[in-house]
Image (cartoon, rainbow, N blue to C red):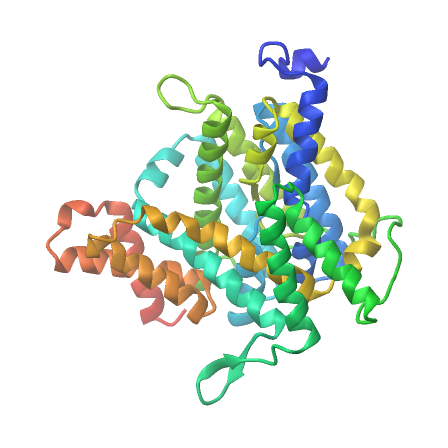
Amino acid sequence: MLEKLFKLKQNKTSLKQEAVAGLTTFLTMAYIIFVNPSMLADAGMDQGAVFVATCVAAAIGCLVMGLLANYPIALAPGMGLNAFFTYTVVGEMGYSWETALGAVFLSGICFMILSLVRIREWVVNSIPMSLRLGIAAGIGLFLALIGLKSAGIVVANPATLVGMGDITAFPALMSVLGFFLIIAFVQRGYKAAVILSILAITVLGLAFGDVQYSGLVSMPPSIAPTFMKMDLSGMLEISMISVVFAFLFVDLFDTSGTLVAVAHRGGFLDDKGRLPRLNRALTADSAATIAGAMLGTSTTTSYVESTSGVSAGGRTGLTAVVVGLLFLASLFISPLAGMVPAYATAGTLFYVAILMMSGLVHVEWEDLTEAAPVVVVCLLMPLTFSIATGIAFGFIAYAAIKLLCGRFRDLNAGVVALALLFILKFAYGS
């Protein structure tokens, strides 16, 4: 049955090799089990229910990817999009988390349509590479700011807007130590570097009496507080249309970049540099987002950590299926997930920021018309505490700078239309 489903011999792999690859991928991305519930709890969602939704949405995404597309690519609720969900849509814009889930659901539907009608390539190609790089880096800086804030290292200051908190406080010290541990583990080649750091800091919290022990395993919490709670009533508002677009936009490019990276590492591209069964992979991603919204979590997307499993020998969808089964098994460690304090995951956010900012090396810094919009995006995302605002100003800046510099040919209809849409949004204050 496995041979028929995954063509193991054809792909020169085995059950053991795929299982090891699946375990490797899971260990590199399992931190989301602890980080996502903690982050969405800040939006007012039930942490136990989000924990279950996170594990089940990841499992569904992995299983669909493995069985439908037959690629060793794992999925889970994405970093950055969960921060946008909590701190921008709910925190800054004032929408309920139910409405935010509705926006995630609708973005998944739009993604599914784009995948099925095969216009994804046109959408992706219409967005300049510099803006894609800037958006990824801006989200990284946004996550870093959230990590510093949750650690108490960066605090509000009425005189200077922001200032340094008490870095001698226990949460700040543990956050710094957690970040240093991640870097040390990664450099030493530990696949589970992030999750090892989270667990180590949690154990220290227990040892110093800052964390209360509540057990390691139990039956999964109820998912009822978040299951099918999405609200679609506010989707026709102009401000919500931009939110849906932001969810869709970030997921689209995150997924595209991840698929290319994993395919390149695994040698899955054909002789023309294209990824076979691309639409199936995109359909799996969009289906996972739709299912995740129904369960009660932010956008589910493909994880670039899948490259670790490919490096360990993963060649087929069986690797993704193994990851999905491990996420289902994780449902029984909810007491452990509930014990993880915010400062244990703060270092993780800072580490993810490093990974997301690495793409800035590919920006054409000598060309100011390309570099300036990147800086606009990178600075405005964290300083306005809004991913959507950073994206909007990035498009406006790109179009305005190119026009004023006489570089009309660098613009396309998609960029101009989006820039005008964002200008109207700010002009009418919606």
